[in-house]
Amino acid sequence: MARHRSTLSSMTTVAEISGAVKRLPKRELARFRKWFAEYDAALWERQIASDSEAGKLDALVREAQRDHRAGRTKAL
Image 1 (cartoon, one colour):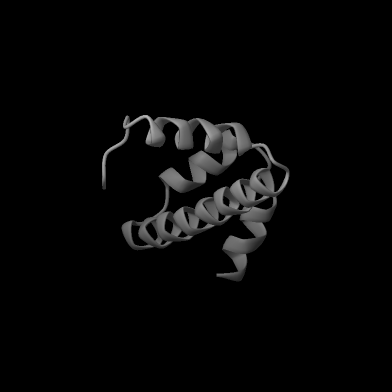
Image 2 (cartoon, one colour):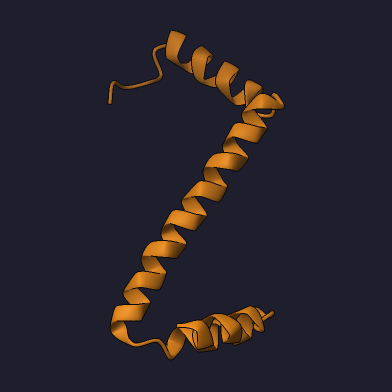
């Protein structure tokens, strides 16, 4: 595994990384997919939180509230 880490850390382009991903055995690909999904979700959550704190979502919230008051929403 240490060999894989040093190889991966030297990869700096999407082409290099995607080539390495394509060569992964099934089991390692499954581990990578799980890790990447969790990594990507965490980045998304941090970005949404940051945007929310900065007020970047306020206009969307107001629009959604107007739509709800006007009866243009459905219960989930």
